Image 1 (cartoon, rainbow, N blue to C red):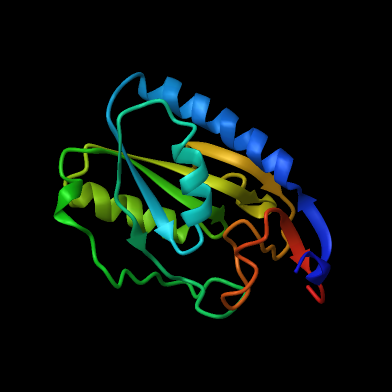
Image 2: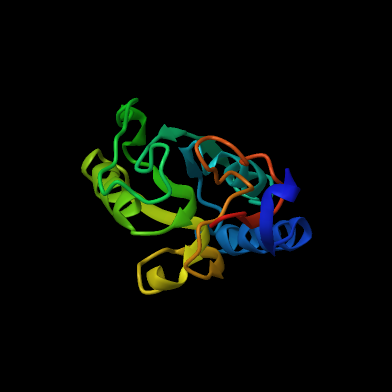
Length: 173
């Protein structure tokens, strides 16, 4: 499958190293407080699983199914939450974990929905942030990348390539 890439932007070892660093940063920022990890499915699943193992805090997990891309390569501009927002967010410190910060609509909308639903606080952690999104708010960022369509390590193209251990640009993109 790696042969389907025209370029590897971030290799497996670099991702693993940065995930460890993010775990240390998050552990320090929350200073022993219980934290609820909110991975955004499907793209944030792999990143969240690796990140959780690097955070030294009491953790709970609350995955949310969120979509804004469908089968395309650009955001539709609207997010859908087919499972809704669970009541169990009330009074909790939440950390949304997502694969990529692109337009910022998903994180902005979801943060407000979670706060409106009673979350004590909502912070965000993204693996990737595109160049044109560098001024959008995110509390923790793994890597800044060029404005290219990328796949791997949870990111997909019509459901494929999520299982690649690296981040790369698919051929013909």
